[in-house]
Amino acid sequence: MDLNGLDFSGYLNIFWQFSWLQWVIFSLLSNILLFLFSISLFTFIEKTCPKQQLQEQSHPITGSDFYLSLLTIICNSFVMLLGAFLWKTGWISLDGNPSVASVLPETLALIILMDLLMYFFHYAAHLPFVYKKLHGRHHEHVSTNFLSLFVLHPFETIGFGVMILTLLMCYDFSIVSISLYLMINLIWGTIGHLNREFFPASFDRLFVGTTRFHNQHHVTENKNFGFYTSIWDKIFGTYL
Image (cartoon, rainbow, N blue to C red; front, side):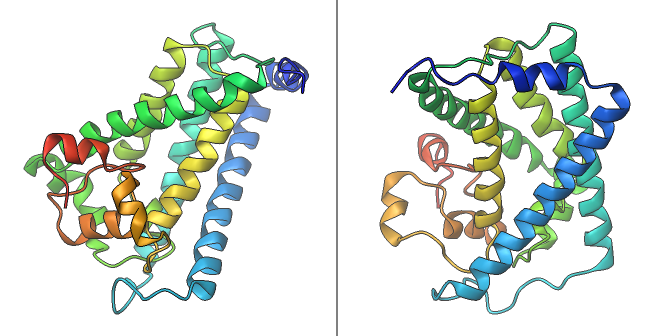
């Protein structure tokens, strides 16, 4: 295999030539499709996974949750537009011709670094004043449904986006690694808000942030702040 054979520079050049109107349309359509993908994945797993439910009943679906989810889509689109601006003005550089060997370590680095940043961001969101004003809305979903992942205050959504954009300004990650990370993030978030365990029980011993791990955070709010892993909770004494 040619370790220098991943050439996405042509695709980057297409995006480089986008007008801002095209960027707005692209970012909105992309995030709507990702939203629908998450709902479809959640529904598919809930209907086909034979494992026992973690909660007796799912959280009821409300109109306010739906509208807040739409606001999350708009905020994610804004973050994508901000990323495009930083890229076009030189603050972010993207590797359009990565080696195959570099994609996996870059993706793993994004997962671990974002997990650490998200741990502290999530912990801060549970400080009493911040929790009351911002994060408490998400925790109304003690049990979950297919919208729970998207029921977030706009500041939380934009805060997550600012963290990843900050990392992208610090290192020239490849477009492949970034895309893989973002897809893993969406899938992991969807699985984390299922109402039934998705992972084998042995994964709890492998520092994996399983469905049960995050479900316990919704039940016991001062524990399990990690997202992809339980590493930081075990290090800082917040693991349940």
